[in-house]
Image (cartoon, rainbow, N blue to C red; front, side, top):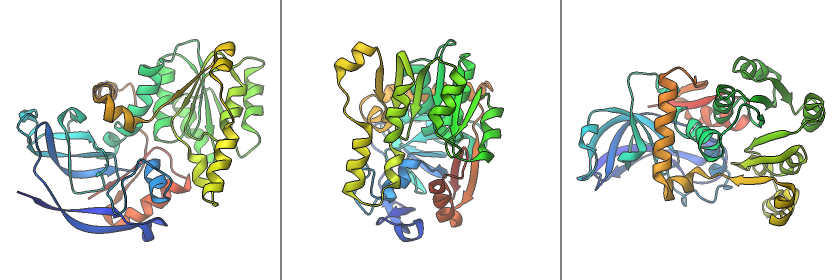
Length: 343
């Protein structure tokens, strides 16, 4: 039996008003270890903006439903899924499909929650899991580390600040708007860099006084890659988890080639000789190929939230009628923390 539902379909590139259409569709009953969730609210991520611009190659072909995370109630399960999930309120990952009133995902991609606000819970999925995976699982932050966090006032950045301070590290928070400085300072940032004031590397060098950073968490890439590598010390880790600089390109393939040129050629022998490390993070690939890691990071994120050790930063909660406004806000770079949409 199929269930009637609705979703915001991404139909073409363009502005939110041009690209998305609210459409009806039918969804199948869950199979095997799958669960069917009636969605209460869903989160927005910058990858969704990249998909809307035609710059996210992992996105499905148009028309499609993007979106990685939801809050809602499990209304049915497949034959081999955990049957005690039925009726439970959960946060859940989905491999796209999140911008819908009903979503099918696997049982291990869910965590049972209480009556916490959906906008806070949604920050624990893509954003917190990405931050936890990078800062606690992949290459744990240590108390003697100095870490640089790009887009520090965003969803991932605000969680990374909290995890780094929880570990006792020194945090350099990079932002692009003066009004975001207070946000990152309250979370514990030791030094705030506004890249629109002057070259952010020169600002950081002044703070470091001849020292170097140990970790860069970089979702920008492009020209920032070489800059960060120039101040990365021996044993340092460059963690690349996005390419938002590419989204500013206006010249199609020429912009993409320029993006690659700015990053330059990386030779493994050079990394070894300088004892520097480059780590690439694509959580979609982790979800596809190592789902148990995703499950672990989601459970740990919720545990830290429940214990009050991390506090999700809410950038805005929008109604379905305000969906286009929410997408435009995310793209603008003016938001801080997590943006979500309630049905």
